[in-house]
Image (cartoon, rainbow over all chains, first blue to last red; front, side, top):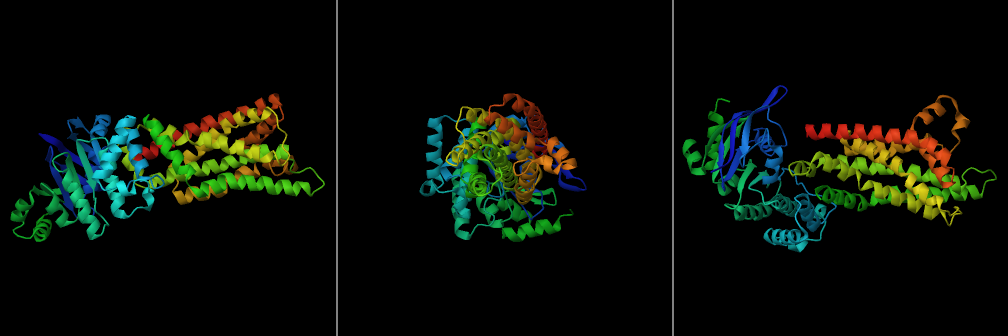
Length: 242
Length: 243
């Protein structure tokens, strides 16, 4: 079953076309990575699919609902962790989690349950009462993803989740993301090759608003005629006419 | 409930900022103290506590605009607002969530100013309660002005415009520090066209039990509050769409 299906999705900003007639499908429970260099259009796609930006033309069905016509329904079934860390800095970790619980109108009991469960799962229990703005980048990202999961989303968008993190924090966050695989459909954008290769079920390679190729890491390596994923990626990007 | 959760968060962000507390509460109280000390040492009646305190409460509200504007501008600059736009929060939830917490903050600020002035010689009467209630329309104006500025300007610009320009505007055109009739002309006309002097005169009248005078000053304040709220909501919705 499909979690996301786009149909000729286009985003144009004045003279710049950020996304060209995009057609792709993401299966339920899949971890799909959008891989590309800066300016490839990855974040624009996430913004359109999460109803932050209106498509110029075309449509996408997210969890069975149209992003063009059923904003409110889409927003109820998705979770988003934006590229920059999106936490309230003067609120503690616990208060940040409680804020999102309140926004999703969870009861007092469910709020407590969710806060406990997510803080344990994401290793935030030790910093539960610390102000979010004072946490390290790695902890802030963990909190950001935990906040995105509070509404029990069917589809989770992670926009460059490990951008700017050190190697250890990145590895720790990867294991957090791996632990979510299968439980929720994840759409992740990244420009780190090893991140896409190591985490994803399938990868979509993007360049200048075009989706050049979609497949598993092995399939893309075959397409790019290399055993090394990075070399295959570079070859696919360079060989494309766009 | 969604809106209340968001409003609660905004309240926490405001009251936990030490700069907000220092400016919003500390500055008006220091002014009260200094001007009262000055009055004690001059032969003319310039800063009588019963006329000064209502004026200071209105002047203090300009800091509420600063809090409101910087909170919204900072939220817009961070990714938090983007995250919240992808949740079931509606535009009404956002607008009320931003505006609601600042009204009790304004009332608390006013009450503290009046209480602080009692040991300095302020007359204690039931009119104190009317003066506190009467400040609400002006507080709405200031909060809405903050929503508007926060939706247009960056946090730096909002700090400059609301922190420097508005506080000066509110001070010069309010008639707190000097009688506007002494300047007269265009300056007096401009001051009368703005809500600040009306708010000060209304507060003074309420505090002294002159309800007829208070009512005559109420209308321009209410009009400014409604107009500013309408513009602020339009501007906020516009930036929400653009984001």
